[in-house]
Image (cartoon, rainbow, N blue to C red; front, top):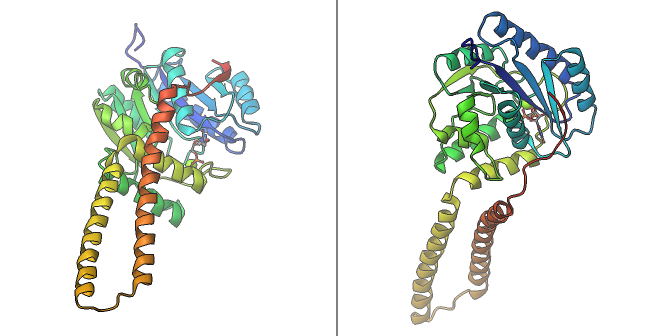
Length: 321
Ligand code: UDP
Ligand code: MG
């Protein structure tokens, strides 16, 4: 909090990857909301909009520079290379805490699919004492059938695997300074923010909003990236897949045992066993089990490999603060 007053300094963090089509309208809209919140006396006058350029290859950074020149409330940082959505969010949060002395940090996607009006409610709930305010999508009618189904399947799968995440909450949230500093204590390379924030345990609440369509441009999350993100989320938080490997092995043993009984009976009743088909079948079956198991174990080993290197998550190339 500012020393003299109790009004929080709010920093809105926006990750941007090749967002030149959408950036001008996004900046205008978010600056408008920031002004309104400040005018209502719910955020300090030196609140900021922080745009994180995640190594874009289009004119995103030039646009950020222009907006910074036109409005000093707009700050920017630029990654030297594309490091992904989660790392862009983390860099924004770190910068907001360390350089911009933020009291509350709101993260939102550049395409404004998540209703920015909900920020007002977030700031209010923060003032009421919540350390974390999570935006929850009320409807997904604007998403394609495919996106909706895969995303909802993902949340359900995470729940079944025992990962504590809030249904339909993505990366639209407010973090208090305290929660953001706590987040900095997580040194793992594979940061799955929505999982970590949910299990930190600070006082939290949710705000509902309707998800709309992308303002402009195309999704920066094609299917391949989405699958990687889902695998990362699961293997960063759950060891259940490893247990599933064990159960699968157990099941194979039971099948092998039943097969043994069948073979013995066939042998003693002198019936010819149709060897080829059953042999091929079990060969493929066992082969499949072994490969799946190796794949899952490999995923965890890959994680250990990445964590042990303790590589920096990102490199900032330029800053406009
Ligand atoms: N994004 C990013 N780095 C990436 C991919 C995406 O910073 O490598 C940002 C992107 O600019 C946007 C947010 O992450 O602000 C979410 O991306 P998008 O809206 O394309 O995802 P979708 O809503 O389709 O899941
Ligand atoms: Mg989007």
